[in-house]
Image (cartoon, rainbow, N blue to C red):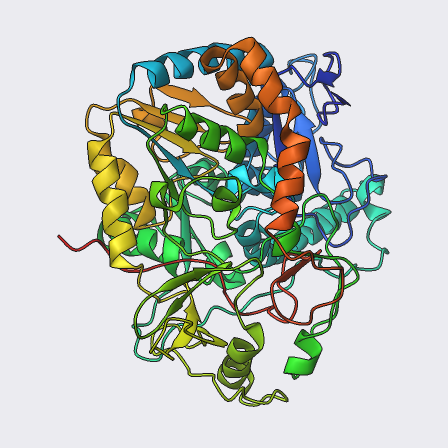
Length: 578
């Protein structure tokens, strides 16, 4: 793999797969074109860019500078520096600062190997090592994540940001026109393109208190503030999920008071006050579709051109490595925030895992609580879509299934349409997925806390450790125990980590196994992956593309077919009872 650094002033060689790098994705102005020579970064048409670490730091420093290309109209004098520092347009500053929030870091191959060796040493010494996994370990299987540069929440948040960037871009155009800047004047006649990200609706329960969705970031504190005219020295900035809130500048005193009173509420809202939706198929451009004035269920139930079903995804190298470590008694337990069922499919025993947010292949009886593991996706999306259409649109063209019952907590339907198979019990079966406002199952949560308290090493893979109450497990169990973290983005627990790796989990775990498993055993195990894949196929009902309407397929825009608005992935709001 060879990548060209996106920094236009870069003088370094192209990036190789073994080099440390930074990858970002920016929200582009509607009138942006890759051929326009007005940016300091060679942004791709989808907003992505890769940098040498030093080049990204230079670009970020430029973006956080208070100086703008239109801030001064005086001509340079002989007393000025012979080579003035490059100045970035205001719109691109906003793009860079916002992209920094979800930037993904990749350590060099040399650093990765050193960290893997240290991690393997800690695993060998540990008596009760556990793993804590998130969406990042499933991305190589074709599933999307949530907070990555192309994550679900990242794209939903980009709508309000895009409006601000478009306004800033227009201001740059107007300023350039007044100062005879022909480069930008040439862009003023271009026709606006539709935004690629559609807005989503977050539905709170009727009795819930009014809450503003906020995202607090330290990176923006020195970025957005410095871009707005007449601003005070950088202070903590809170980005609201609306254009007016995003652009409004509060005084330092107001911000400090708000930060002191609302810190806990902001964290709770950021982590839990929105439903998690179907995950995105990686490396596929989202399909641009106009939003209808009066959305109906029939419009939302349209099947997309490319879909992938949960039944068709398979365990990654990381899933299988964790199962292997469990079989070798080097790993005692797994705590997972994922609901894709890949841990169990890889052969991990059910008694060795707590799936905090449920499993799309597991349903349970509402009467006797017996659990049934299936080879197909068990959720009935049409039943939940019926209730969500009524909530959001006031009407629906769907017929309510006879078995459907609205959940008092999440407002959706957990019933799958099947009944319990236990003798003498005909209770309705329900899915195990934790939707927004649902409580996590106490036995599963308690078991996770118990295993964490017994552990002397925690291996965190593919998670930003921000979703509560799941992330509290790591914090509460930490103490003086070593912590290993592998994730592309920064986490709030990085300071606690004994080993911190930035990069892909599959690459990291492959290096870890080199130090834990004998060469011959490891090679033999890796060579049998094809055989394991055939076995996985026998335990899943293969779903051809477009066969299913509205139940468990994931489209190219990251939505479940027939579930654009509904959040059917786990975000439990309950806290652990003591």
